[in-house]
Length: 314
Image (tube, rainbow, N blue to C red; front, side, top):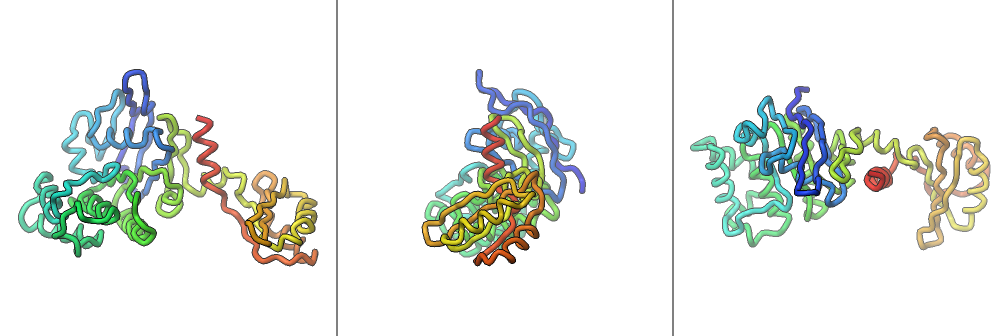
């Protein structure tokens, strides 16, 4: 993999407010980086500085050797950017918008026609190319925004909330596209959706109050969860206490929690000591206990729990 993007000491202050506080990281070709944080954490401000739309107070971004503070045009040539909310000219059709973006980027003639055709096909908007953008659904507007971002086949994609407002089918299509493009590009997805990180990202940076509080793979973040390697057992409510008594006596089980589901079924969650693997012990104990179990599964860990801990402790 070759390094595509370097962020060095990036800082943005608005008066006495520090929105982004001395963040540094790099992204390689072939990576999909989830830039994750709660609303107001500084994600969008950071992305605007990286793409040259907002000057940093300090620090910089380097794109294939070009410094965004010194060579903003060269940086923008190499980046495809989907801003927050995907603002579009709603009186234009998608064809007119993509034609306009191609002109701005200096794509002309046959190359322009092929670029428009390719990006429209890739994001599946060919059937609305002649319809005013203002009449399109929110999902289609989002797709048009992504189409303009990939029009010039950039080396780096910066996507701010790319699946915001999309229905489940549309989210799946966009995520499939991101996974496909990731083989040849460096992609940064700014999001507050944990499912986005789980589905498409190879790495996640968590930002809170303008500072980076974690930089790991999704699996490494999940391993920080108290649910990592926990065993969840679904069974009839009438057998819950007997099951709980059996499992709590196991040496590597730290505690067992009962979670009602509003029916005559419940879930017991057996938490391991120090993240140990306890599935085999639990399974063996239940097999000899006579307790009837409907479902038994191992937890990978819960990103939402880790996210809350990291962002509230910052």
